[in-house]
Length: 215
Image (cartoon, helix red, strand yellow):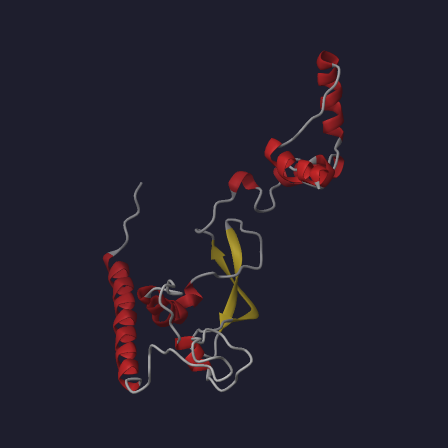
C-alpha cells in the first residue's frame, strides 16, 4: 500500500522551503551590497615575511585581521565549500536544524523518548533540556529486535554473552578473546585434520595479528 502525501502537507512544506530560500537569497544580496567596499578576494602580504611570499596562515603576525585570513583565496586550490552548499548551510539548515538529528533518551523501539531542545541564537546552536516527548518511531528499523528490550531475544542474548564472551567473536582471538566455542570447534575439527587453528576473519588476521608479528 502506497501512502500518498496530502496536497496541503506537500504545499506547506514546499512553501516553507521556498520561503527560506527566497529570504536567504535576499539576505545574501543585501550582504553583498553592504560589503561592496570591502575586499572579497584578498591576497595579503605579511609584514613578518619577505615580499615574495603570499600569506596563507601566519601565526606569528597579528597585524592581519581574522576576516582577512578567512577571505584569502589561493589559485590552484579547491574551494573549501561550494557556493550552494555554503548557502544551504547558512540560510536553510542552520535555521531548521531542530528538525534533524533529534537526540533520544531511550532505546529505539516502536516508541521512544525524544529529547526537547531550545536555542537562543536562531537555531545556530541547540541545547538539550531534561524534558522528553514520547514519539512513534518511523525513522529506524529495529533489526531482529536487538535495538530494544525483547521478552524473548534479550534474556537469551545476555545469557549467551555471559557464558561465552563479552567481546565480539568476529575479531582476532588475541584481541577479542578466546571463547569456549573456539576450543570446542578446534577439538572437533582436529579429529579429522590433527592440527587446527580457528580464524574468525582472515582480513582482520592480516591487518592485526600479522602486523603485530611483523612489527
